[in-house]
Image (tube, rainbow, N blue to C red; front, side, top):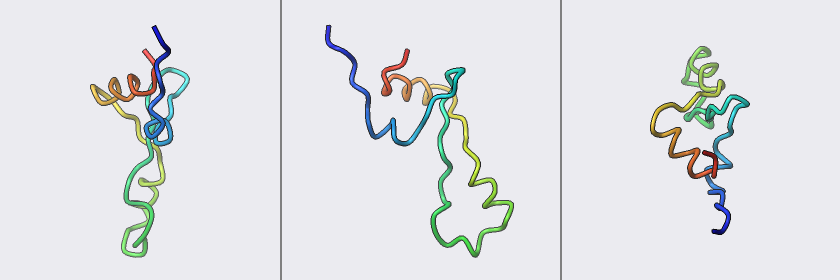
Length: 65
């Protein structure tokens, strides 16, 4: 059976931690930042952990079991 191919678009958007969790960047941090509060911008700047069935699907797209 041939090797599993990595879904490159997914690989560019997420990364796996050493324990196998899926990390993603948060949205809404690119433009129109003057109207957003400092605390909101700080929260946008922190990565988020993907959980549940979505994380399982992402791992499958990356070729990780």
